Image 1: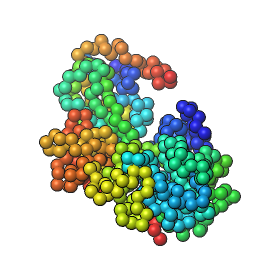
Image 2: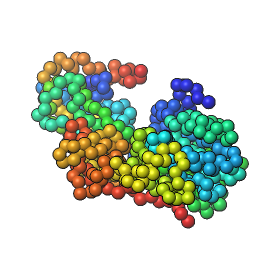
Image 3: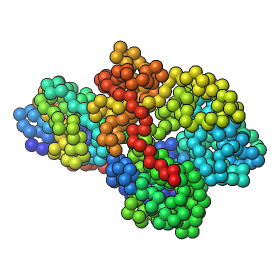
Image 4: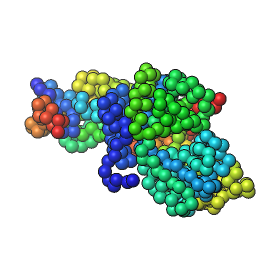
Length: 374
Length: 123
């Protein structure tokens, strides 16, 4: 499975190179960071039309076995048991201290099977975690012969509906198994840009053929990891290793919305996952830190690692992600702040190269989500 | 007068009278991608060869502009503060960064000519 330090390629590698992509090593793969269009234009193209992203480096895991839904519930603070067939839900693997090991998408395939999409950098550890925690009663398959594409943007639905009209009836966070031009596609209406869009899982053997088919449509352009990051930043979506990590609980990372009611204190299936005591306590007492949006004054990007301090020069937090937001034409940041400083009346500053830049706390997302809920 | 190049991908255009104009090369500009912010030094600052004198922020990351020569900074291209894209569009012209009055004109001899620079970026 793992080939050590060797850099791997996805089934679209040749297409990226032929398209003139700038390739960089990312999570053990040679990935396209940008194409000749450039990050800003790729970003805007996705917000206006449809961007095609190769996300085949991500982990695609199939879990199966009797009562697999309740088994997965022991590893996530999320309602999996009541997840309807062919519906998708956002979840988090927690550790014993209530920290986050990874975030993931879970789809109920029915027949005691679940399909998980996990972060590329965590996929081996997630696989090991599942094997170890669930034991031999469950089948855990990390399928490395699958490709994953994301088609994101307001025109994504039009592009796919041209190939199969039934796709336009899907709503946000639902899934469908479909055949397009004799290619088996597992499609979810989801994504990581804040736009309407789809993720398409398919065999590596069909990958090039399917991507070429999508690219025949003028609305579709390849978009690289650079714009993927600026799009998710504007959409206020967490990135593992930045807004989420193993030493902060989901509550400390402002992901309360992802913690299902039924798994909370006093509810029917309260706790019973790794780190439940810490997470339930954070929900009750309030967390020490929160994740907030920041609008820095001026044009200088305030990137991850920048210290946030108050008027008196006391450190109150740190930027977790930051950069330029092409849609707003502004520099934007996300930061982890001590909870008592997350009220907007505080005057806060970011330190960049020994300069103090005033920052304003704002609500996330920076750019409104545009999901199709039917 | 001819244009010389540094290993940090800057061009140095000697205008005579120990005055040089400095910018980044097309190669550097392409590597950086879309620029979003340029932090310029103050006019009147002194700089020493090898010192970081400016920060160039692309969509992806921040990079330093390293002084290719020593001297005093007599002018900065303040247009870049509002229009960093000038560097992308015209790195050898409108997208210039600073003008320096050389304190040690001999340093120009350590820079590459165009052929040497082209060979350098081939590697």
